[in-house]
Length: 180
Image 1 (cartoon, rainbow, N blue to C red):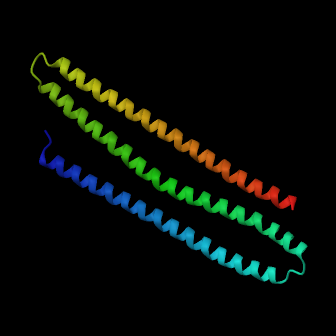
Image 2 (cartoon, rainbow, N blue to C red):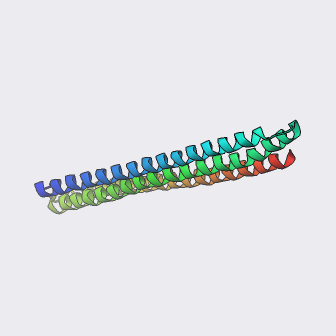
Image 3 (tube, rainbow, N blue to C red):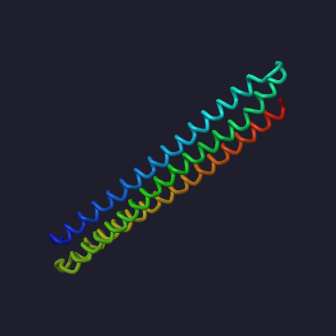
């Protein structure tokens, strides 16, 4: 049985965890807003510069050459923006995963303590039931660890694929620019 003090301590810990996660979520939103502001400022500046450059074009060939030269930096900036956005989202998400893992481990330890306490105070002959309960907890823990590993592998694979896509996008832009 949990005492009132243990329940209050658990409640306080849950509130602190929630507060910490809320802070991390706001930090992630702030970073995204800052990234968007920087991207918007850069886009406005680039647009103004490009408009000035277009006004100085004298013939169609020069216009085509200028268009081609503008495509590569645009693709590189889009890839960099996407990469930064992914890093912010991934970093914020990893904080939530860490908190969930810590909470799960702590809850498991507390539950095992309760099971051990029950086992110590259980009447004679209930050893089999206690063993079944412990095995169930161990199986659930193992399953949860396997799910966490699979999620981690999927996240790593997604990140690798994202980085490869961004790299291919930048390379394709360079190739397209050279062909023109």
